Image (cartoon, rainbow over all chains, first blue to last red; front, side, top):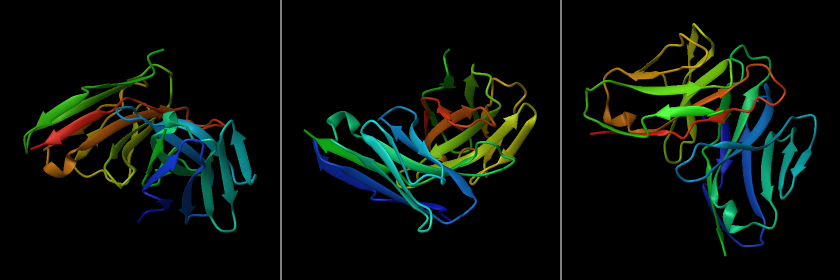
Length: 115
Length: 114
């Protein structure tokens, strides 16, 4: 049972365009929603994260939009660059879980930004 | 700091063989975990540990064992390798109770079972 569903599986955008990746979750106990970025041959690295008490968080060209009622959140990459080409994973963590920092990941989106 | 290190980087096993994937971190993180990454399936949690001497199962624990004798090390053992265990394995660590919950991932081990 996939508790965090991510779409699309792959995405191709032109340089300067906006990349949008969407995630939906089922469990209302989730209270922390990070996005991880992974380059080929590397481990994932935290890109940006949000908590459900805010609807949007922006860091440079990266923005998370969060819709608590719809149980959805999305990553927007403005002015996409070829260097943004990577695999992006959304994730979620339950609050007050005894397992500490346990994350549930989405399936991943392979983003390609053409020059 | 070296961060999270994993060895080996690549490994080929025959069906039925056993091996241990090594993971170490030098950030004094309490929480450590093992994931496997397969195309179209994201990162799936195999086992995790919230501190030395404490381990628990994740989503896909069958065929794998772990132990945590020190804060720094969290090895993953494949008892009898099967082709279904062909995957890329990532170790990750984090502080257990912090505001950011950021997990730091190692570079991965690419395992092929023939």
